Length: 94
Image (cartoon, rainbow, N blue to C red; front, side):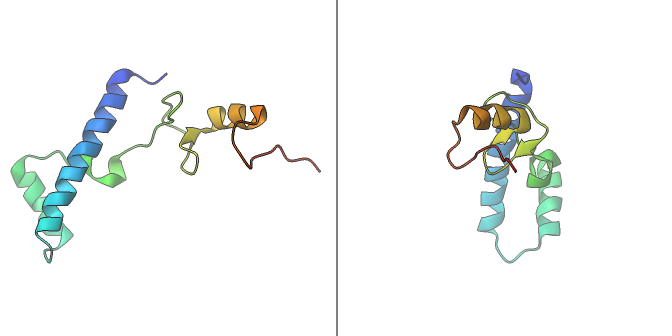
């Protein structure tokens, strides 16, 4: 299981990102560079931008080998697929 602090941190970053997006949306017409400069001036941590947010498995909290379509890591995906809990996914045979 992922450390609770890392999950909390990721959720906090997502919240801050949503707030930053709202602020940027309010001031449409200005470029992204200006938004970054304003964020720096406001003391906002630049880690809130989407390129730095790391997806985590919903089942175990693993941060690597994440499958976006299923919101699971490869290990949990394989376990659930083999048990037949993911609709439409079957083990291939040839």
